[in-house]
Image 1 (cartoon, one colour):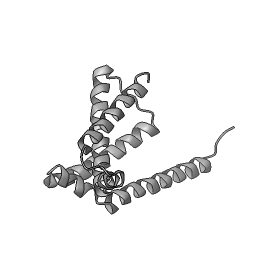
Image 2: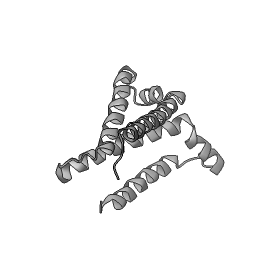
Image 3: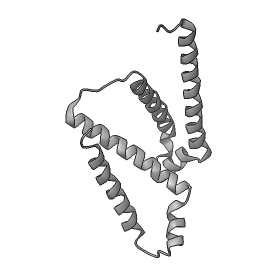
Image 4: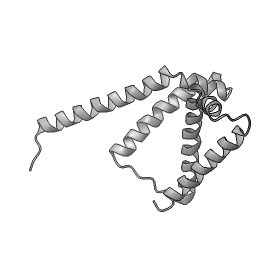
Amino acid sequence: MQISLFSHIFLGTTAFTGGLVIASGVVALLIGLNIVPRYAQITQTADRIKGYETSILLGTIWGTVMSVYSVSLNGGTILYGLLGLCFGIYVGSWVIALTEILDMIPITARRLGLKRGMVGIVAATALGKTLFSLLFFKDL
């Protein structure tokens, strides 16, 4: 079965506009929750906000290109390990910034009646996520 030029144009336009909708939602979430300024405030790097915004944009473009065109990297275990470490730090720091904004940690501590030990709980959570991520991805 041969796909017509109209079908290609229609599918391409639909995929492009769908991508714009998703990207707009992510950007709206980042802006609406003030995540970038809060992240800069937590890390005391407010002078680098443009760099954060540029990194988000370039990372989004690179991720899109890699997923749409099935780009693969042949760098070996060391490159994959470094990339995994960078991805983990990036995602983890954004999650921490998001939980800070939503006050999830203090609300949880208050509801559970915790007076002390929050550092241990956060450290155990981070260690558990790291360990189970390594176990999950070891065979991929």
